[in-house]
Amino acid sequence: MGMSKQTNDIVDSFADKASSTDEQKVLDDVSSKVQELHSSKSTAIKELLQHVKLAFYMLKDKNYNLSWKSKTLLIGALLYFLLPTDLTPDFLPIIGYIDDAAVISAVFKRLANEVKSYESYLNQ
Image (cartoon, rainbow, N blue to C red):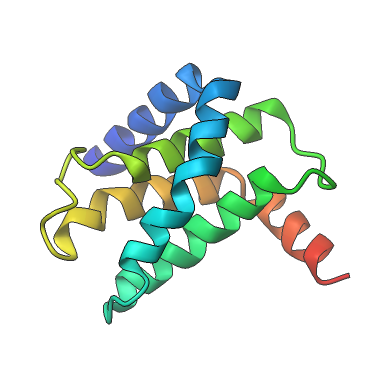
């Protein structure tokens, strides 16, 4: 319970502060961070990147109607992903991304219906 409560608190604090300026930062910076990690052999990193990419596309897709609340959760999670010094610093190989994965997963759990809806929308 401790980590998930802590993770949800992190998600909330980032989402509560998310703004359109943050949205633009995420849209500008996520691709290069994904590219840096692209060659990783770690299954956990590959999974994290799949979630990051999906969150990024949901945010970026102007034809998909996303509520502001959902947007702030995605922006918050992606801002956390971009931070080099979060709970576990990203320069620590693989381990550095455990907290990023936990934050992204927490957001995906909260937005499960929205994510399913977006995946259906993509597969039309």
